[in-house]
Image (cartoon, rainbow, N blue to C red; front, top):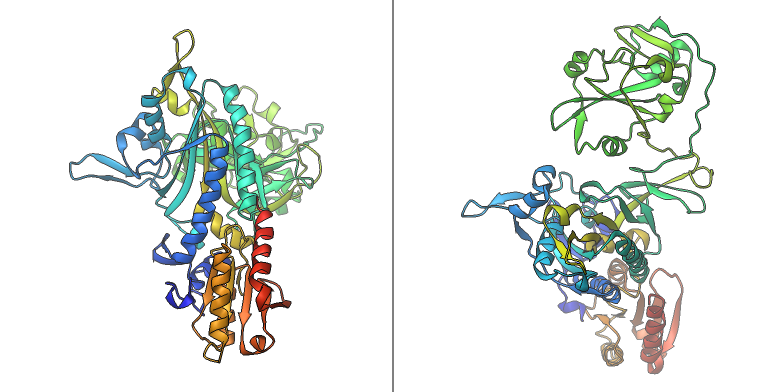
Length: 577
């Protein structure tokens, strides 16, 4: 491809709304262009990268017996009504009616559609297991799209779905899918990806893993042991906390005027935050019932853990009116005196197993000292569980070493769905005795555009991306300096054709721009290998040869350059097989 004919300009200025380097470089390098918030057109350079990522994905999915299909983006609401998700998924699911007033939706994922497909095509245990996958557009009506392709509304995703006779067969296949994902991310140049335990969320199922590209701009918080034997998303991470029991002291009501926060109360009573109990109230959005979470004062409530423990799909912070109606006083609330039959009381282990805590007395201006759950909540209905957020430095549950906290971009996820969809949608098979059973399902997703952006976050410098050879839009760029000078254009054209004949993908900058502008554009594009033909190099019958990201350049004989570079390309590609 010649630059003079390629669609997509390089931009000198950084877009005002582009905060991450992948967002900046994809726009400045002419890879993508914004259409609306969270919606982008992919330009020719970007399409070449995406095509290569998709090719790698297809190869690895086919190796684990995946069969490619294509399902529609627009789906009838009745499929999601069958599974129950039409009502439970929030505003991120775009719902609309067609001209016949039939309720429809734009698919953000395809569990329902593929389940409806398989129940018509697979009926016997003899046909199982089976895995179907697609590379398809999705739409998620994100409230706050950000970071270019990292969080968009419209995106391309590889989603795969496996169907099995039982859980054991799913677990065996799940390991194969996990290994395939590790291979995919290595092949596209994302060797900074960690597989971590995660929360299944709206997808359902009990076991799931996320594949996180570690980088500072990531939206997800990850905790890992120093040896990486333990890795988990903040939503479900646990720690080996120990809460020492001390001799119980008498419960004592003390005045705490104008002191509502943990910090204010701790300072007034001359205690540490870990000697207090924190009260947080929520309302279940299904019926507005009250949930009262109690954690030790130095911890924060982990709302995902709380929702999973109580099996509550969605809740909000309770208003003061609801808190007062339950017999508690905002700012001075505590579990003593609360009716556990009217309010769901949940104590974190930190509050249940610690001794002599300071907690609210449910009276304006007063707190209790020396609260001990086992004694002071005798006869009260409450639940004890792990509902707090892990912190950096907390002891690892496997090794006991301090946990490290890092940020990551979720580039893939896999789920053991079980029978969540097959049971509700009657996707059954007949066993060898003719008995009907729901199929056991797995689900496996990769965000293609997000993966492309994550590669840049992992591999770039101040001037642009440094693409891995496996997914670079082109493998070599030829820069012709002063092509109007005698012999320069001809030599560059000859080198260009020789490389093409050897099967090398080449971008030829034939525009005749000044050297500074040409090299700046080359850095913004980020192709791994660069050849420069100029009057100076031509006088020596050579070309300048440089790796993207390296300060050093070498000289190659023009006669041997094409074969030398083609061999280098082949060697670099071999690293990603």
